[in-house]
Length: 319
Ligand code: COA
Image 1 (cartoon, protein in one colour):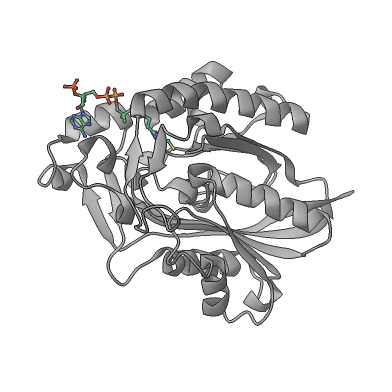
Image 2 (tube, rainbow, N blue to C red):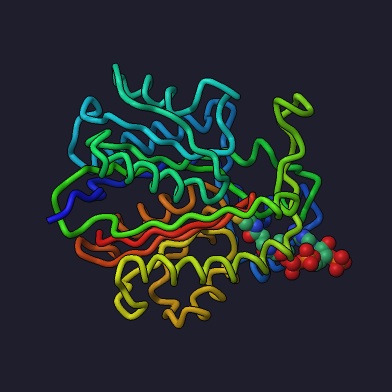
């Protein structure tokens, strides 16, 4: 037996308000047909004034804690991935900690945009295996609607808000997280970025993207990192039961699966309902597939994501 990080529970939360492509077409020059054909997106959730990254993260965390059957007080580590924190500081992780009534634990945010959840998972996994913590909340939560330029039809149709969370427990087992692989290449940070920040413009800024170039890099990087993580875990693609990818675009999911020779039936797709929720998309999709019974205990699951930076990464686990 080996000390590994096991997923004890999953949870997610979405803003109340939903916006369909048809509703978006009333405010920007686009059509349902264009969005569905280019992206597979049909719907997204948008946070209201009383909802925020930390409030969605807290709701998702509570569901993961309940699903795991543990007490909030048992959590000794919170790693929250977000590019849209409630405030520049304190971290949204400490806001979740306070909302959950946890007196003392390690709590911090991780920022790797859409790859944030994979980075957070890898960091939490390392801290659990090194004995720095025993039970972690790993959360991806975003409110990208706040940083979208609602006049830019090429980007505003692509994103949504939401949160997903996992309880990870350190256990002596042969299951759990088997391998993680992370990458970054900052030479491409002008292809997907926000044109503001506390140290430059002093404003929050808006998301800017060269979509076509991002697409090209995504398929290459994601298929490479999936191969890499499977090799590190001693697995073949044939042994994979489920791929839970970052939900950016249905065409990226299809192209990546094809490149790896994976059946599309094994790929969990929620981009149609949630759009791209950045760091929240992988745990939101994982929660969906666990709760609807597709992902079962013992299944081999691979997670992957790619985002601004560029950053990209993958994890292989036995659920
Ligand atoms: N509705 C209608 N037309 C739109 C549109 C919209 N929402 N957005 C862009 N267009 C138009 C463009 O203006 C352009 O018109 P033109 O030919 O008259 O100039 C045309 O559609 C093609 O634009 P282009 O950007 O080349 O389209 P594309 O085929 O590359 O698709 C994306 C655009 C964004 C869907 C695609 O590039 C993509 O998915 N990229 C990856 C983005 C991503 O996933 N990013 C997040 C990674 S974490």
